[in-house]
Length: 458
Image (cartoon, rainbow, N blue to C red; front, side, top):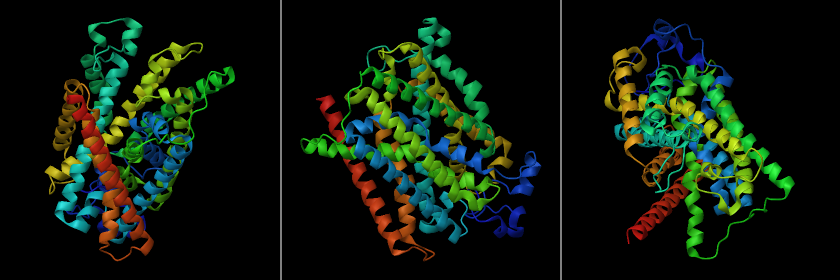
């Protein structure tokens, strides 16, 4: 299955009404065919595409970014966020350019064009591992925020428990069940990603609201003189602290990963030539949000900044209305993740369909298959979130590695393969840098996690 045409509208020609089950056939029906299935759809707007791609980018990763400042210091941390933004833009530009050159309409189709059937399968498996892992993490975090958690051995009360006390109806499993039935399921049933533009806009607004609250608290504490100036540069004292610097790379990659949705969003644009501008606008906006969140989050908590900065909002902040602001931050973040969920779920469903039903008709045309895949994935994610108390270590081993493949290794490999002989010398040099940096950083991450696990077991 493929996901959508990123070539200009004028090149689509009379092939709109044909559905060919191969690498170059769009997953979603073209406009005339889609009218038979849905209401008339004249293409997504530029701003709607920006909201959807921005929501894809800003997921749970934003909460881990202040901790990267703790490792890197403010100067190097901000510089690396900017660098990752430009590197992500370059890798997506590779995808768009090589897709147009080969008239390829999906990320999976592009990998299949460059490396054959197994290249496409590898891409689909990476999307499966990355997105299922991300969605389970989202649901676990939502459960922790609303119902509390005791996974660390100490019980941290959730928002609902703090408001109403302990009851069966605000327990973790019941809250996640209601969230799945009442929020995730309806949003996951949209057959066009553009239909999620309003929920995406609200999701971005909630991320900005989180930033505004952090900014207000930081300014108040600056004025009151209770904020200590954080470190500007990393604290490297030995070889261990030096290797630790590389552990932030997968975190930043995960924070910027959006490649699996680029073709989906481009497919529905009214003017598909705008996809480059959509990507750059989204990356620039999210980079600004990331820099400000990282800066003010680290300024606020300093070396006490936790791996998930949300956990820092579980105590008295030393300001008026502290607990009210804590609840506002946690509730807005949980609502943000609920609205990000369907944007990440959409490409997961497409790639599952392509992996198991590669020769079937377009997914939106098969109501039974659409319902079967959607319900099956929702049940799997729900069970994972309920029966896996904490998957952060596993997520670092699998999700972050898959994200690195999706974000940099695969686009760079396509560029080096260069089936259509369009890559420039600087493209190939940048592609090599992407692969070396990705592989090296992930080796350091996996090695560090393995050593940590061994020390815990001793």
